[in-house]
Length: 384
Image (cartoon, rainbow, N blue to C red):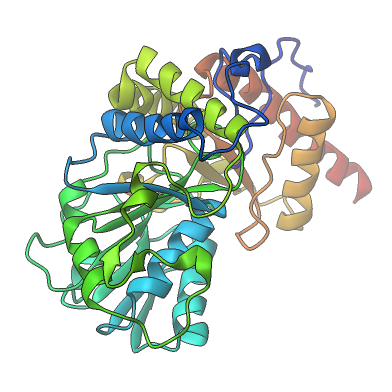
């Protein structure tokens, strides 16, 4: 018997995992102070970029002796920059439990061809981080954007280590508690947890990472946008807002607006609480139903941002086709946009729950998910 179609709809049906939902108070008019048509090297441009760095430090609680830079090409550019400039000085431990981590493995092993041990886990699971050799450089994602699996904490990373820890935190920053003393290089992008616009990456370096840059020269050539040193010294300008290439000052203004909003909801703790509440609403929904479950095997590693779900009903004949059709039904109704699983991930759904999403919109969307599932089961039965 078909379910009754819900009537209430989310005010904002955007649950994409990147670019993510804009802040709830977003208004284009709020960007009117952006210095458009001006050089980013003008005083006003430098001031805006420096403010973005300082506000990032304040809200994330980045230590004063860590360097923060705005770099090209989103999180991908920031992470590639870290690998190409710092890897090769010693062996590496390459860690992957989802597609983006697997991409970093490919770059290290097939492009840079460094001496690397590769550690992988299936989607929904996580590598045993305590089993790694931290006298080597360790490259890993903190939160698996495409698998919904995150590091529960940094306890496995020793305080005393010879190698660098290089962390892709793009779907964790501003939603999860990052232990800065355990992270030597951290990268993320504006379009993830704070819903910023694309193409800008953030690179955060510990003093140990700076030391590596100033004492090690990789054996391969570096393109201009990857170069962080000159004459054996860190290029300080990058870390005070003097970007390597031309940034979008409109995107910078948007990021500053999002940081102001983050401060207004309680900063990092407030953002974490919002993401936790959003994710919990979905976890409770799954716990009350026998046809859907979290992709993350261990509840301790469930992501509170990119919540990945799998359908578990025995009546489903083609999991990939079923999941795609459910996602299409939700989009056709205008109640959940861009919630299909990532192309390399197991069939299912991926619902973004970062702090810019309102829990009320999650709550309004979930009855539609219930309805879409049962509609598709009915359609499948009728076609049999």
